[in-house]
Amino acid sequence: MDHAKNVPAENPSDREIVITRTFDAPRALVWQAMTDPQHVVHWWGPRGFSTTIEAMDFQVGGVWKHVMRGPDGTKYPNRSVFKEIVAMERIVYSHGGECENGPGVHFIATWTFETVADNKTKLTLRSVFPSAAARDFVVKEFGAIEGGKQTLERLGEHLPQMLADGQPFVITRIFSAPRTLVWQAWTEREHLLEWFGPSDFKTTTAKLDFRPGGTFHYCIQGPDGKEMWGKFVYREIVAPEKIVLVSSFSDAAGGLTRHPASPNWPLEMLCTTTFAERDGNTLLTLTWLPLNATAIESQTFNATRPSMSQGWGGTFARLIAYLSKITKP
Image (spheres, rainbow, N blue to C red):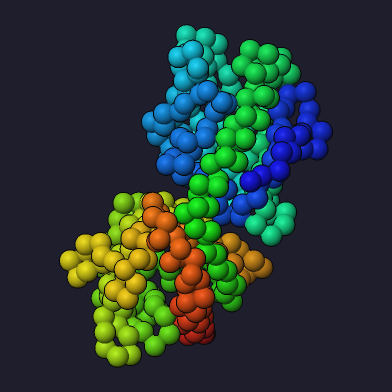
């Protein structure tokens, strides 16, 4: 699944611990595994450890609280605060932890994600301690280097299960418009009504509650007059950088339904959309992944990638035309 490259990146100072590993998995999948608590609990910590996540508010200023339990039952409470998040590229957080009734440990952690080949991701974990003595203490007292290696080994073992649920569908577009405008077009009801949906479709109903836990409930109508309802449930919003949501087909009342033309389509999809500035333009990356899918649902998802490309391609074409219209002087 992954290449065993648990070796220091560059030449860490005497205050640092640096561990890298290259995984045979796309960057979007590795990012999801490390930022979604539903996945983190399955692999975080050295072998023999289990982790309970009390909170993981993945946004700048958000708190990540978790308790690791060792093979002997000892508890290790941890509290981190996210300082910087660059979607799909970098995460920085300040960390504080301790052995139950033991000494505290503090450092600044930086995770970087790099695509190094087709569907391969290089992950680097860098921890910077207040002093060389503090660094040496966690190496000796907690086996931090070996523990870090084992943690990434466990991540490498978890990723195949995620891949079994279907390789992510990823599509990107560069829009000739500033990121703030693309963000508005993607997140405001009056804009969504004008462009959302494949070519030859029109959005007839749109109810938007744009906040974590909120929903976007919509109806699109095809050229034959048939209606199709859908629903988004927002999980994470980092304006104007990232939106994470669960997408499903729906009915007029907002209930979850199966795909009207494909009963084996996954009931729910995890969708991550990122917005990055590129010389005054906007690079948008959309990643779809089946959520809690059965084997037949994953097979259906994988078999319909061409139609997904066509559908989103038409949708992006409508957005390009709409952005051109509203950016004209």
